Length: 574
Image (cartoon, rainbow, N blue to C red):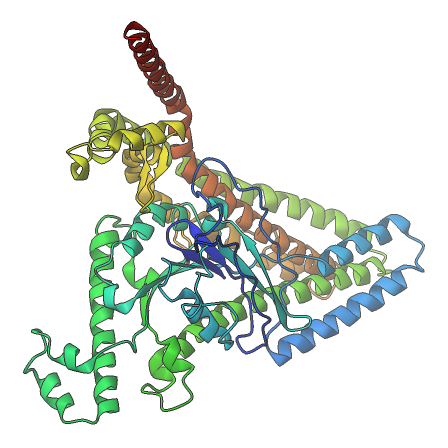
């Protein structure tokens, strides 16, 4: 799971995991004597951090049945490899060994959950509570922040321990998140600007240009409430809730205040997400991607006189979300592994068949498969051509709109924004913008991205169609993902025709190979989708680079001229 501190200072914890396994203490980030982080990252600048992403070990099964199935399949693979050593057909045997080895050492992508939040929002305490280890990550009780840089805590399902190392986050990691959690103190959840800045600045990398299927807003520190002040507020004073809770004991009164505030926070955040995101991006369906949790890590870990019951802290619900994600990922991995073993065994059995009609049957099957492949490719080609033409038309309209409005948009949002009418000190922002090829992040986290701003009209033109073609969750009638899932060169009629013959074993093997290829193709499409979506901003940057360089040169020349004039004046009066 990935933890993001603030906008670009990041902590990273990778799942899948079992939430109750023991953990070792995480490594602490490098902190200066003044308590500041050393060498903070500058994502998403154009330079990429030198660190490489970590790759997971094969996903381990979570249920007892899955573990037994995997063990049986692994035993079968080991026995087959031993027997293959004694067989004479070297070329065929080498092929089978390669398939077996690839199957055993195959690496599955991790499920990554990005957790954003500024320092002090409660990310470390939240993760500690979910993992059941109060001291896994240092939290607010420590002098310096733990999650001010990216920390990786990776599950090791072999010995049930965890390792931790510090890395920096890059845009590539951000776009790989399957789910995103935004963490904020409940007292400022709806009013504070940082969470919404995160969404605004990163939304395209997460949804359209990434893999994110849902966004979860997590309100922390829900137990931090003063019932007297809360009930005495103008909104609640003398209300039915106020009068009812005043009759209760202290603990019950506090619990009632916590639950009421939690309900109100969920309503307010839902409304704000609708205003900030859904209305601006009509292709987004709120009910499918947004949810809110109100949690108390303190109460969840409180064994002495807790105010809230475990379920009321909503930590168990978050743990269940992670476990469900892990289970879906694990089942897919187990299914792929066992299917692969079954396909290889089918091929071996078919190769050992002595049926005298095999040559003729193979020839007939080859022709049928070839014809089916051509038919399926024709269907795919037609769909891809339609999508290409549709996007090309929309993009042309977006380019035309961009030509008309780009200067005005750039002036309003970047060059002379409404918030900086007086212009004091803003020349430094523009200077930094040009030095960094159109991107700048201020010390308080404000982002200025001229390239993205200039591409807004083009993105607005393609976003809705792009979401139909490349949905992150589920499928649409026109999605490439669905077309790949439905693709098969082995028709039902073909399977029925060769049933109860040795050729059915070849079809079994071809089916497993086809599934592996389709999974790889779906992954490749996802990666290409990111490149396609980000290419608009990248292309704008390439076009604008000479302009940025000219501005930098002009600034340098002005400074030189100014320095020379000062030098001349000093010589004149010396």
